[in-house]
Length: 95
Length: 150
Image 1 (cartoon, each protein chain N blue to C red):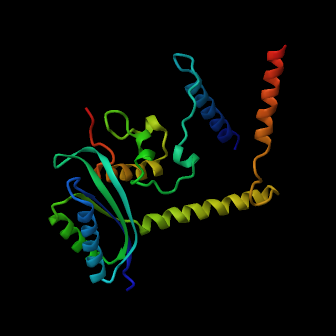
Image 2: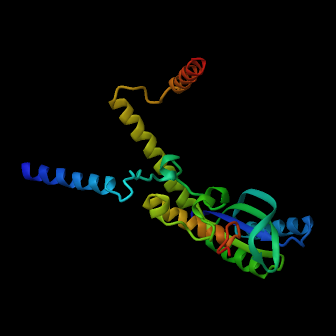
Image 3: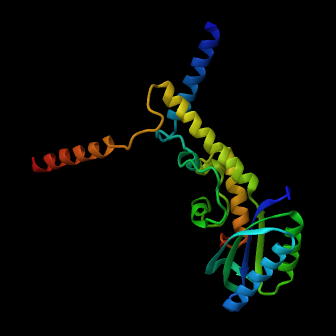
């Protein structure tokens, strides 16, 4: 029991040092999924304005690591963007 | 029939087509849907919109959205006809019933969890209108005003 708790504690500590120990000394805030925050269950492919923040200039789909979207919503977002692309609501590529 | 499913059909009509042409396409869709005992729940004309990229050398097109109820055979026939139609630049049929159901289920589950948790904390099931934040900002404003006065 005690050992287990100790292990957990140390893991927590290491996490802390991971976050705080940035080279720049900056504290990086944890990103949260925008769809979870706004409680959006269905990502509508017809609503291009909702998809645009996740499509950077080049037209690619922004990765989870950059946008902070959770896995479930990223999957839904992906299908929505791909459908919107077929309908020319959202570009495939922009040069 | 029990095999009725909910579909969303969107097609983009070429900008060279007249309003009558768009209406004509709609009646054609209606005819096919009627032939397969389907139903059109809603029709929405989004009007002329800019396309995100050129399709058949067109830079804009008229978007028409139809919410359909019907069978899979109806959709195959619709797709076949739309593909042949020259004025239709693009079309897309998406089956939406399952996705909408999952979304609804998540929403109800979330509401229930919230109710249960609020009940466990001894709070009323629904939160009251947020009054305190407004007050708080007002106080802050007053405070800043005081600072300015000082």
